[in-house]
Image (cartoon, rainbow, N blue to C red):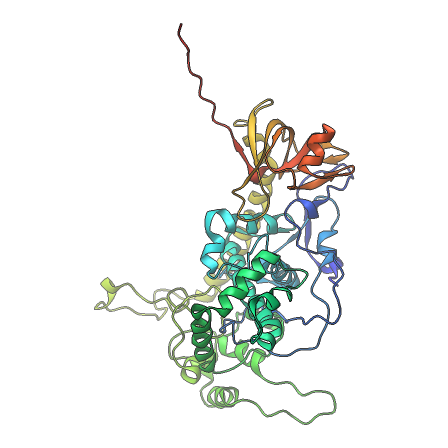
Length: 481
C-alpha cells in the first residue's frame, strides 16, 4: 500500500468537492481488482538496463500490484514527481510512478501483448495515450517523458517474458489450441493467441535464442530491489553534508553489494564488487565527484566492467547515454586542444551550486506551466469545437483508430456536470447521433448504461475523452437547376 501522507500531492483543478471517477478517464488498468495470492509477481527493478527476456528470477509469490491509493486520491489531486538532471524520477513519488507504469505495461489496452516490437506499440499515438494516462494521476516535468516510455516498454517486455516462463514453457509441447485455453484472466484472449503463435513460430524461437545469448553476457545482477539507480543516488546525495552527487561507482556498490540477513554470516560478494572496492581503496580519486562529473571513461567502474553496450552507461539506469554523460566531442573537435581543467576562474563549486539551484527552479516552473496548460486546454479546444459541432467518437482502446459513433459536441467546460460528475480537463460532453459500435464500453457509465448502445437507446448524453474525438469535415456543394 502506498503511504500517500508522505507524497507531494497537488490539486490541478477545482471539483467543487465532487469525485470525477478519475480512474475511468482512460481504459481500465485493473487497479481495483483483487488478485489471486497464488499468482507470480515479478519485482520491478525500475532502472535495471539488463536484457529483459532473461532477467526473470523466482521471487516470493504475492498478488499483483494494484495501487488503489493512487487511484483514490482526493478530487483533482495529482502526485508531484521531481526528476534529476537526466530526467529520471527521484524520491518516494518517483518510486510510486515506477510501480504505476508497471501496472500500465500489463494492460493490453495500452500495451498490446501481440505486438513484437515496442516501437509499434508507440506508433500512431500509442505513446501519447500512455502519457495521458500518467498525467491523470501524476504531475511530471516534460524531461520525464522519455523515461516514462522507456520504463513502460521495459516492463512490457518483462511481463511477456514472465508469461512465457510461467505458462508457455512448461506447456510448450502442447498444441496451440491447448495453449490458447491457458490464457490468463487479465490478458486479452486475441492478444494471447497471437503471442502463442509467435512463440511457436521460427521467428519467435530464433529471437528467444538470441536473447539467451545476450543474457549470458550480463556480468552482474541488480540486487537493490525496486529502487532505481537514480533514487539511490539521490538518497546518497541527501546524506552528504555538501549535497554532492555521488560517483556512479558508489551507487553501483550500494545497489550490488550483497547484504547479510538476520543472524547469517557475511555473504560472499561477486568478483566485480570485490575488484571495485579494492580499486577504490587504492585509487579513491577514480570514484569521486570530479568538479561535478560523476562518470567518465577510465573511472573506477569503467575499469572494472569495461565497455558498455551501445547507448547505455554502467550504473546510471535508464535514459542517460554515453554522449550525454561522458561529453564526447564532435568529430570536428577531434584534432583540437581541449581541456577539462577548470583554469579560467576560481570558485567553480559556487557556480555549480548556483546552477543546481537554477535547475531545481526550472523544474518547479515546468510543473506550474504544465498545470496552467491543463487548466487552459478546454478554452483552446472551444475554438475548434463549438456547441453543435458534429464529431466522431473513436474507441478508447489502443490503438484508438476505430470509429464507434457519430455525435454532436455540447461542451468541454471542466466544471460542467454530466450525471453529477464534472467533466474535468480531459473530457467533453456529447450527444449521440448514430452508433457504429453499440458494444463499445462507456468510459464513464451512466445509470444502468454500460455501452454506447445502451446510452443511445436510453436517449442519454455522455462524457467522452477529448483525446479520442475528431471533427467531421463538412463540404458544402451548390446544386444548380
